[in-house]
Image (cartoon, rainbow, N blue to C red; front, side, top):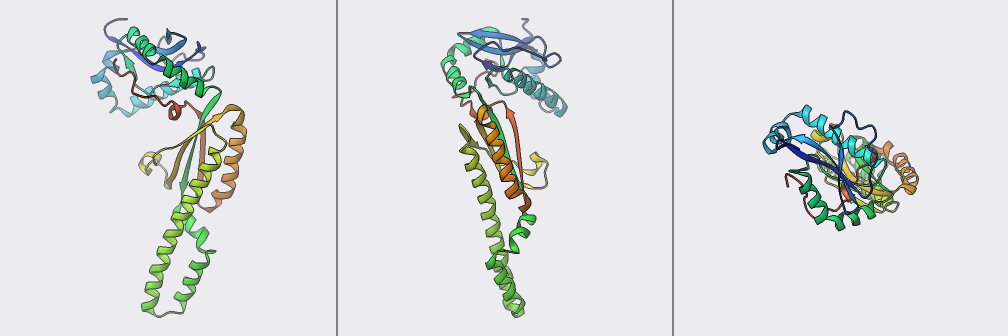
Length: 270
């Protein structure tokens, strides 16, 4: 390795993976091994991935899109053959020896994580809500709202103003209750079919590029033998909620980023 190159880490496995169909994704993928752990790595140019280069390139959307896509694709290909601990995009080491030292230092922690991840997959569930459609779905059958609506029709202008305000407040309250009900029920039912589950922060529309608001962002670690039951439950939730203004988006399997539980940041030019 020349002084102008760094070691880029993709993931760590506890047995040697088969690197199939990785041509064109990265140059010369190889393993750095230590005490039964296999780090999947490649050599990258310091000019491109060093501190200054990475800072400059991270402002280039097309560069980030291409490199991040290759990063995830490589992990997906390795994951098809063995369980892995995925590392975030841009995890770098100065030398193979520094990567090997990291495997030595955190070896027992990595092995414990891999035992937990064995024969499991990460699945993501996001729920979006069309507020206006949801309001319509319950406004016509919510007894208290209908009662106020009837009172408005027979009230004076002054009283109807306050009744309309009361109705709007009740609709907003009911809207929030229905959103919470959908999110909580969906999460709890799927959690029962999972080994572990996480709720992540909600993403704004600028990130999701959707018109509807995200109301649940969750991840589930599911035993491979239970994936069928998990997906059947997702279908049941869709049937129950999607006609009422909700959109349930289930995706996977993903690299298990949400369930690695690493105690500290590893890499980054160590």
